[in-house]
Length: 337
Image (cartoon, rainbow, N blue to C red; front, top):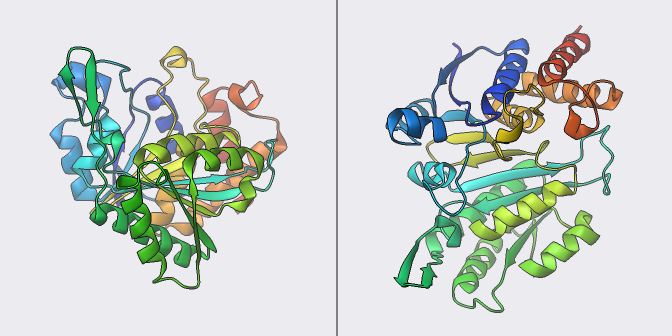
């Protein structure tokens, strides 16, 4: 039986990179029945809602989705569809692997760390209101339930994947109650996993340490807002958001996504880099139990980049999206021959 997967191409370059990833996944031999839906700015124009209910119903039904980038207006307009999607479906864990890809020269050539971000609360939830004209209040909510749940997710992931250390990132020296609760929950959960090293760092120091000696980290566990910032910082250490995958995971489903923006300035030009969404697609295939296909795509991507002949412009090449896609497909055929 084919897997049923919800497909959300997204805004801007989303349709181009999603088409590329679908092409590569189908070339791997995995049978997937895609249920494609519009979300984001186009959905708002067409349906009056940037996240129509049929999209949510499809994800609830299929339990798995692949999502391209969605535009979030800055300073005005509709609320983030990404945030709404995560909160509505309780996709409480954001998983962001940060690894070097062979063939890409970066300041740190041996980096392999995992960012685990709590996805449902904290300042990033956008709970804010005007107190009086000129004064705005934003509410930071940290709960024992969510903090314990994400800490356990991080340690279970470490145990399953053979990771050695989990570091909690916080600002409990200043926010003694909210971040203090997050840290306290982390320490209680850590006691249940004595074989895994557990420590903690203040978030500003962590940012400095990441650009000086990132190899000291294994799994980083963060609250929602810190996780959003630090995951992008970490991506910059290995080549940027154009190559890093992401997943939003909950008890009832998982959404695998491109973590970069919709890049409307290059939309329709066939020059966008699909690697980030492709790596997210590899994570999705692993989640579906299609590890052989996932491994083939991962090796073909590395092979294509290592040859340094066909790369998109952001990776120092001149190839169009379709050329890069077909090069990976050709590498897959070569590796599986």
